[in-house]
Length: 544
Image 1: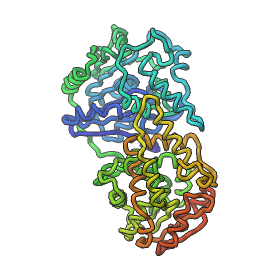
Image 2: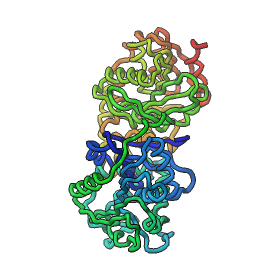
Image 3: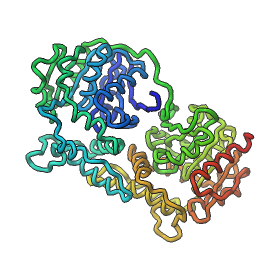
Image 4: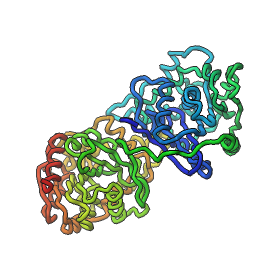
């Protein structure tokens, strides 16, 4: 939609059912509903702007702005008349849409609509909407994880008193991790829809809406009492009802409600690719970020492991100065599905499938760190698919060191109540900027280069690691599963191995260059701008 990316999940076929989430969550909240209703509907769960993977709206948007953005997203998706379900924050956005575009709404279920009894309490909003601030040490992770825990204990979360304790069962640690992941993804923009909803009184819309509306709240919802605040002179198109706390009975109510109206199927296919998109491969979906202009043959970028491509925006914008760049999340990293065959050969086959899906073969590839193993493996097996390759920091490790790598990467990052999994991921990524390997504190492991430990970069990379905590090291272990000394002589493509005697990460490339038939060793440029020019010149050399 213009320059703004909108992320959504979809399942099923038939009349369209649109699901909207609360703040600071994302469409991941509705995974159970996607499964529950995809047998009868095409279910579309949208990420609100600024949440999940959707780009934020500029400035301080109002509920009307979010409703307008929702209408734009529906238009881009080819959704005409649909059934809608909104939870908490999004119920106000949905009600606004029902007022401004009633013909779009076959039915809107507003689950948990807050109706204030007085003007917004600025002190309350300031306390509740505490700024989300990053720091270089990672202290923000402990602070914000504690807030997540308190969100499920007290209302409001900042009033830690017995009188504010909510009489509800706490979610599982896995569910708390999912909540925290969405909250951390939104980061500094988490306040946008949240604060807009706090300042918005839906009473006027409840009086003038013409589309069919059900205002609902479950008995254990902190907003259940707000059902009694619905204006007595509300629109005749509104029905109010209480719902049981039991999830099974609540789903039965939704099933009955959704069966009554008549929605429509989508009239168009998905929107064109934007700055971020997915491609389908036999192994599942692959998440792709696009940088630079559309003209020219793209460079494919493979990120270092573990992590994803999310933190590499500044570098990739420099690399895209001359040619467009497509940066993919490797399997089980970031937003890409894991591969079923997790060994080295399975990842090389996956990369071949990705080139086919993106129609890039023969490709120019820039691979960083451990991902170099997959690019070299593909260039050895299918040199016709790799025109040229920059292998920046190829991992060449001894058997003893490989055994230590496997021990370190076997450490679990499953969510814990203390939130230690967040700090472990953060410090792993921060440590790897200072030393190689990341766990080695010896003087020999010091990387004599400027570390890139910008807090925002580390936040994005940490999120890429912990989107899928069960597979955070799968691709890395696969990359270390081979000896690149055996692969290098079989590589038929041109390969640049950037060298840097002060950085132990580059030592493998300095050895492999002499063993690769068309390998070139050259000093690694220090700045991102100079390095981007260096790599682009090498990749384009035979195209001149």
